[in-house]
Length: 320
Image (cartoon, rainbow, N blue to C red; front, side):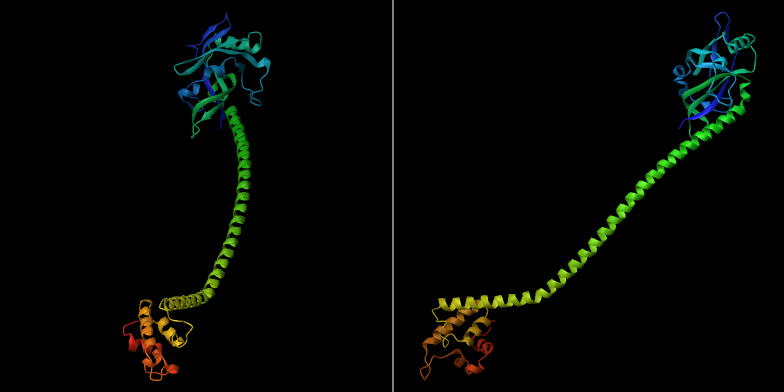
């Protein structure tokens, strides 16, 4: 943000050349490196001096009510031939003798009156501590005043203008921040709604997962039962296949009784063929009555009391 302040430079008549014939004041110091109001200027602050000061009007006295609203009859001359010397801006003042203020300025300069100086209002880029001028952004007005070191009343008024200007800038910035705050609050409200939506969806998903787990837990016993039944069917199919390959008629319930099938199903898969071969051998032997010797009788039990485990223990020790 630029700051508007007043700076002064006393007319040094030892260096100012008064050319009465040409009506020009030559070698006028426009602004020193340190203002009598306490502001210091960096060397870079004057780099645009030529463009800033060239052809600016010079007026007599300050207009304390309206510093920038000068009238034609208040003009004493115009600044020309602006240049930098030893890091400070110098220029010439072409005096307008057709205007009373110009005549007065030329007369004062010719008599080399002390206590007369250049005072101007400009907008500056200041350092953070507000005591150093880093750049001159605009020269508002240039005036010739009496005793420029004591123009505090005008400076104080300018400071009040600065405060007013800063206040307006702060109000604009505050409005901008309020607008940003409103946008952020709206975004936050939308974000909160999304969070609530995600929480609801997450709760529903957890409920669905719990339900699926319960359903799986209920299905698992039935699944295990089906696996057992499927294994039993597969074992029976395998046993019947072995019996068929051994040329034993599985429809003959005397030779292939349910008890014999139970023996085969209870036996380990690699022991079943041995049991079947024993059965084939037994088929050729006859009991005294002419009947086929069954594994039930060979085990010494009645068919109704036959136990496959006892038979395997008695005839195939070690077979599981």
